[in-house]
Image (cartoon, rainbow, N blue to C red):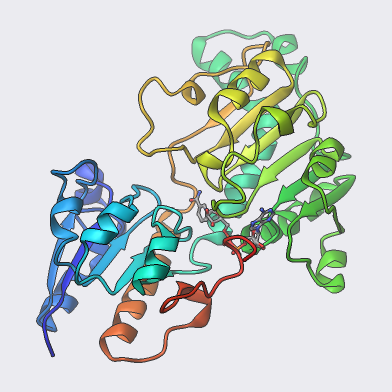
Length: 361
Ligand code: NAD
């Protein structure tokens, strides 16, 4: 068998990765793949350099047969780069969400795109529930007040509410969206609604007290809390824009851990500033790492709170990293041995989309 060149674009872990070997998804710890791949005679190139024509991604994509990327530090596989990738057969996303690959170009070039489906969906669902709570309960300004040495309960309580009795809606009711609704059940919310072109079964709806709403404008107009849990594709890019935000209830909370580009950056910042939104939280940014001056880092509601943004880490807990590193290895082993892949992991098969989640075609 010919040796392959495997290129992995991962995030740099620095000191933390040296001290914590379970940070598998880092440049330093290489998803634990090197000893095994090299024992099979293959070459592994690992880097975090991904931007521009002189990056390692642009340089090594030319010869690589396999590219491994991660949504946390997305190596953007544009049509341009895919055109240059003369040997590329398979792109593997170590994690969930493969929008950083030009999927249409991959279909045309018959390059497979796989991800480790399900590997971090509980991790993200927990983060969504946490983010909903921290916005609704006005947690961040309360903590900041304590760190500053101040104590003025009324300043926090004037914008703090209970999640109990609120209507929560999800855009996308797949693995993450559904798990969010499951995890909200003990909170005695008033109602759960969802918008997804794939309907849940009646049993699944009943189990999480969910009602489907056909139109996304209708959905957001009914919700106190909206959470975005669909992939980024042509039909969801910029979906939450100034026009849709007008249909939100005044003072609603919005949580997006799906992809930054699903929400219009400036429209969200303006809605928070004006108080149309009481809060926005999530960990995903359109272009990562986010620039230092990205407005979502510091935006606030009129009372000085409502920002629950973090770097992209909800799906890269140490537990999640163990799962997506193992899943990446399984995909590679199947590829190496010509064994069939788990269908659930295939986003793009040979020349066609295998998933229904990246838009209705
Ligand atoms: P999934 O495929 O199980 O579910 C996605 C659901 O979204 C599907 O039911 C699909 O029909 C629905 N959908 C697609 N387009 C839609 C639209 N226009 N309107 C409404 N619904 C639509 O995927 P999942 O495992 O739940 O993951 C969802 C997304 O979350 C991923 O694609 C990824 O972008 C993001 N994600 C983020 C992190 C993180 O660390 N922040 C980690 C994992 C996944």
